[in-house]
Length: 424
Image (cartoon, rainbow, N blue to C red):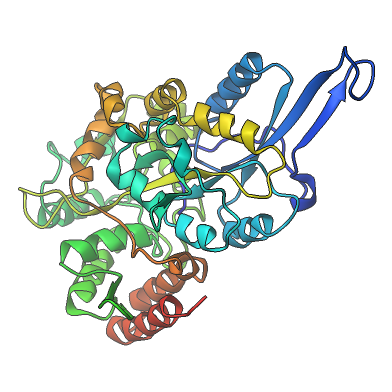
């Protein structure tokens, strides 16, 4: 899945898969000499926008200091096209040692046979303390291939100055209130909300709120769910909200980066994980302390809006030439020290139940926690990643916003069914 937070800097960028392998060599008097010291270079793929520059740098420095002779080559990867790149790496003899993957992608990668089974490591990794909803997507047929790294769900980030300017004194509690408030904010050159047309994670929440789903399985066959009355009602609400701003109908939140759009100061709201505030403040430091957060409103005040529980897992390719050393990196990234540091800086939900308290005092994290109570996941199919990769829902959304939503939903649902029912 696409990560949501502040852009991470590239420490080392590979020119391609041919430059991504790990290596082990001997330094000193010569190979195998008594005075030689084993030196291991490990390649780690981290997705852009997952963690900040500072976190990358701190982890690299701390890890290399604690593991003499080990060099970390952390390479920042783009989400666009990552599915094919990871699939190719897993099938090669030249794979990176550790890869961050979206939690919805683990099933597809595990089905390829190129991911190391880490079931026997779960006790050592504190698996009994993992968040169940975060750990489950990494477990396929009873085996743990993906190690849960972090979780996050979307909230509304708003500009306090623009709310005050419009006379809005309280965050909305229901969808109807949200539309009314956003209409007030969408005046005088200000956008009530920046919502691009292809933010399908947000649409999914509206569909779940209506009692629908993206796809359903009757036990043997998948059926696309975008053409149901419930899903169409969710799309109708999305269309109303999206119209209260100038978000492009034919692109997603990354094109252009929505944090940069918001940072200009004339957008009242956007939908993002709380850590999106890091990118906004980096782009415009004047907005520091002027950002507020509230859960995505639901249909009624007694229940927050449904949200996609996103997150990332860590996997070790079978083709890694240093699997034991790669495991130590995974253990450190999934361990209490880094999980605490990451949660505090990025407002992520850490992978352990016992670490929930580290987010106390954070307005963004508090809003996220409220929304998490109505969290959902994408259909649990190894083929779901192919639905995402082919942009079926994104293309449907643009078509629905510009044409006949019901007709386009029928086409998209058929495409989803065909992909999910394809036998590997």
